[in-house]
Structure formats: C-alpha cells, structure tokens
Length: 133
Image (cartoon, rainbow, N blue to C red):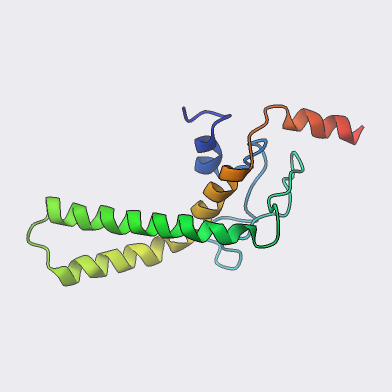
C-alpha cells in the first residue's frame, strides 16, 4: 500500500509522481530560500511537473484542507485528553504548530496536487532511455 508504484510513496518520499525516482522539489522543504520550489522537469524521466501556467494555484485548496485537519486534530486532542488546558494555551499551541509546519504543509500540498494529475508509469525511465539513444 505504501510501496513504490503508489501515490502515497510519491507523496511520502517527495518523489516524481511519474517515475517515482527523481526529486520533486529543488531542495529540502525547510530550506526557506526555496520553500515550495518545484523543479521544472524530472531529472530522471523528464516529465514536466507544471501542466499549465498557474497549475499549483489549486494546491491552495489542499493546503487549506491540511491546515484545517491540523487545527481540528489539535483542538480535538486538547479537549479529549487534556480537560484543564485553557483556551489561550490551545490557541498558542495551534498557532505555533501551524507556523512551524507551514513549509512542510505547503510542500505537501504541492506534491499531493501533482499526484492528482500526474499518473505513475512503471516504464517511464525505459521510455526516456530509448529516446536518448
């Protein structure tokens, strides 16, 4: 279920959705100079990551859903497991968690969005090698 060939593998490893070998991002997700910068093409299979100009604007919806999921998870956890925590502490923890996780959630939303539109091809590397000869 999480092995190579699944969407979850590409998302979990931040790998190319098409061949699942090449890197998807320019650098690490917490490199603040290049946060969320996606490569133009895969360095292994050559697939173009951006289908059209503004392709990743749709990832904002995914980022919003991830942010809401983070908020709800923390809020429910506080109210189920820690009865005596004040509202101020809850808000502070939620805001801090959101700020700290923002680069990760931003990158995660882009790789999820790309995986919705770029299909895995187990023969993607073979096709590129044949085209190179």
